[in-house]
Amino acid sequence: EVQLVESGGGLVQPGGSLRLSCAASGFTFSNYAMTWVRQAPGKGLEWVSALSDSGANTYYADSVRGRYTISRDNSKHTLYLQINGLRAEDTAVYYCAKILHSGNYRYFDYWGRGTLVTVSS
Amino acid sequence: QTVVTQEPSVSVSPGGTVTLTCGLSSGSVSTSHNPTWYQQTPGQAPRTLIYNTNTRSSGVPDRFSGSILGNKAALTITGAQADDESDYHCVLYMGRGIWVFGGGTELTVL
Image 1 (cartoon, each protein chain N blue to C red):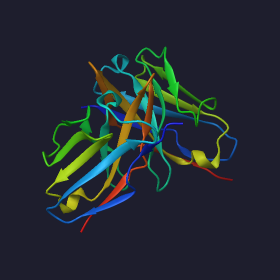
Image 2: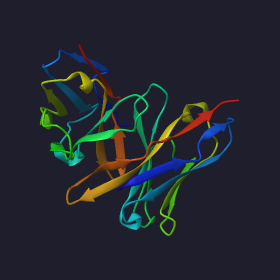
Image 3: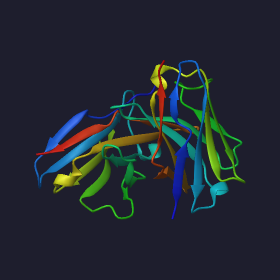
């Protein structure tokens, strides 16, 4: 059974930093690209970042490029999201998801339950 | 900047048919955008309904269907049920590793 478990969220002051983790199990982690998606309170989903299976290629939404860094440790089956210079608008539930890419289609097929990041003084 | 558009809220009567759409602020949605639809209830993670424009995910009832209608992706629910009352999110693949979600549609069944 595929499982994705996020951790690392919490209450952080503006300007602070956090590293989110996503522990994966139930599939061969190193074979799949992964992604982070966030959802601000009462808002829709927002794609944040994605990372290729090897970790060599990273992709970011314009809204977070330069402050967010996505990475992975395939030996630990874990995906990370480093967030620096936190702002109030970064307050959200952060989900990690597995990307299924097959032939000419791709989508986020499994999601974790998310971890809440709250930025407030 | 690419904006993906969805109806903010839609209502349907029990047993009725409703179509939610997913468009682009500039241009048309095509199958190459890999339209994907997710259903989400409050406090829960999204659940995949439709991927690759029109393929139902495992376990999804056949009253849910996906298509391209005109210049938009569409999610149609035929024979809506009370437990279909949820938020529905579409996402498009823009290429080069970039994805964009729509703002989501709140579906009310009443």
